[in-house]
Image 1 (tube, rainbow, N blue to C red):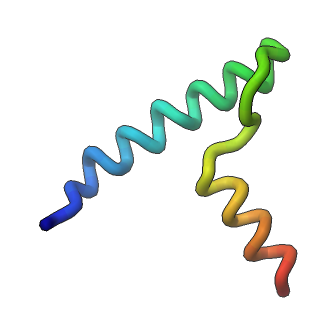
Image 2 (spheres, helix red, strand yellow):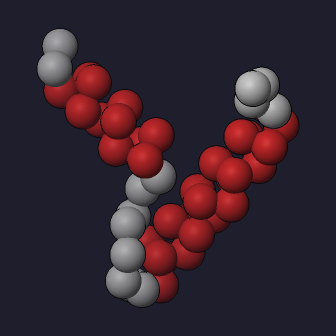
Image 3 (cartoon, one colour):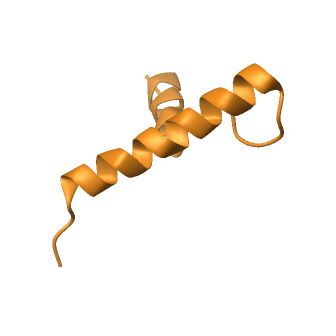
Length: 46
């Protein structure tokens, strides 16, 4: 089973756009993507 990198990136782009919209509009929901939350967590561990 192979992961398509382009599909993975497009999924990330859609989720990032939705998170940016929520952040700017004050709409409910996550303000960052899962990748963003993971990066913050990993950087806090150092």
